[in-house]
Amino acid sequence: MKAAIFLAEGFEEVEGLTAVDLLRRAGIEVFMVSITGGKAVTGSHGITVQADEQIEDFDFSKVSMLILPGGMPGTKNLEKCQKLTEQLKIFAHEEKYVAAICAAPSVLGHLGILEGKEACCYPGFEKELYGAKVCMEGAVADGNVITGRGVGTAIPFALKMIEKCIGEEKAKQIADSIVY
Image 1 (cartoon, one colour):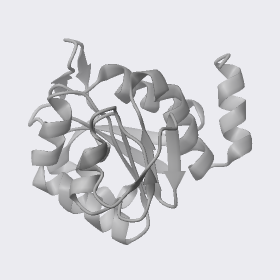
Image 2 (cartoon, one colour):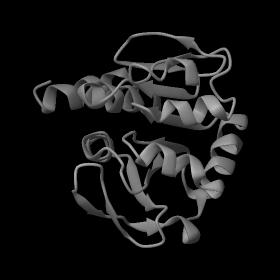
Image 3 (cartoon, helix red, strand yellow):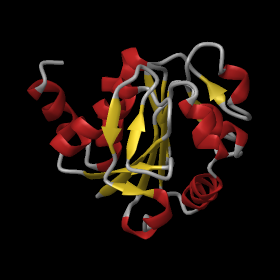
């Protein structure tokens, strides 16, 4: 299993890096992909992260999950990236995994990916989850779509991705290993 997380200027650092850390602990190869034109990406709280690859050079065929961290203006910057939004639609259509947390589920909503699916988001963004059955769980998976509410749910969000990709037992093992 391989995944890609997309980093835009203003991404929420805890949401992005918690996903990378826990998925890698579970044995999922995660590529941090910059959409900024350079590999250094600064998050919404001034923390600069070095991405593994740039979207211009990224081969989407090598992954089976796309992950969007939230944060502002990171979420808006992700949504402006046409190459990313095109791939999100393709992945959703092919029933590959798409995951988003905080404000980022709004990107999935605007693309029509949440239609008829249970989804959650940061409070105040519910109206952007077009067609979704909005729930208030910390993290929820419905078929190939995984969503989370925000920084405080970054661990449950990552564990939900592990559960869907590898299984409940592995998610529990990772949760136990981090004393969650």
